[in-house]
Image (tube, rainbow, N blue to C red):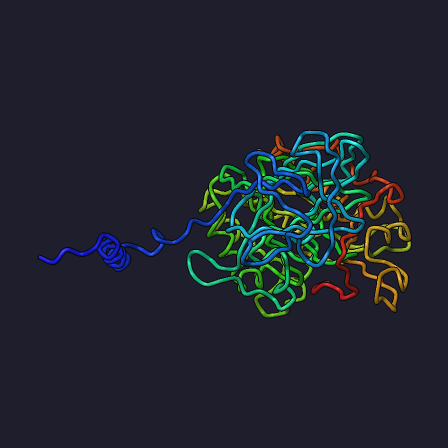
Length: 447
């Protein structure tokens, strides 16, 4: 009998096991939790130090991203976690490679020897923290970020539009935008969590996470009004109808990950009304597809919610909003009644919102800007369908009010949202959010 050296014998056994056992048993575990301590000082116990030189790369898997420069400030107060921090004069990003799922993000922000003001967005400009101020102190704040990939576990993948291929929502990273007059970031913790109620959004350009200023939607504003316990997964896309949402496998994607007790909010109509086939129409394909979405969600023991389409900005001579959506809002209401589905009548609430501002004043809720308001904008922007940050923020409040009026289970997780009446909106003049770095004059698909 020939005796092999232990190293050779071990390697031979390893090769044999690789031929027998599934590959994942030998794959390196994908990391789903991180603890970062920002600055140039020594890292706090259990944390990974991240300095301004830590630029994101696929090999490293984390770091400052998209070209913005940051600087480290050290206070030397003895607390390793908070005696130094990262800041910048312009908005900056940090990205971390993570698998698909929901992540609890906990930020320690502030300066122990100075003032601070920070607004945080995630992925494609989802508002997570709004103008958090710190004065000679630090705060620890948490929120939930949903990460998704185009691949569908049951087979195939989402058919992304060309405009989505560079979208932060669909890449391999969890990306955070730090913004404000003086954003001071001391530490960051990221942890995958599987116990969140997930609110899936299916819709069009009035719902989608718009990538670029000044375009915005209620779907990317609503995360700001929920504490941990609820994750927002916005699968909407500009230009889609119920039919094209189906045909691009977006419903398949949602159904592959939705779980009992989750929600599916559905808002369509703007693009559906342009479909002119013999079987199309508010009471034909639109109604039947709505029922399909609802039944599919219920088969997964999820909770469907119908949202009527936002009104377009169109006034008559009496300063009243004109319905430009035909029978589609009525058809959505009828489906909700017939199938006993909770209804949020955003069509009615948005009309009251515009009327409260008036014909001229309502332009402040939409992408109405004179030429040269943004870089590379030689012409005026005048859009009566797509919202700016103010309009999207107010519509998100309408959705929150709809959740409350229907007494949906997720209302227990609502934060910082007093009762809201769209006929008495917040003044546009008092609203402000720091702008994200990316902007575009290209109108989103759909109208």
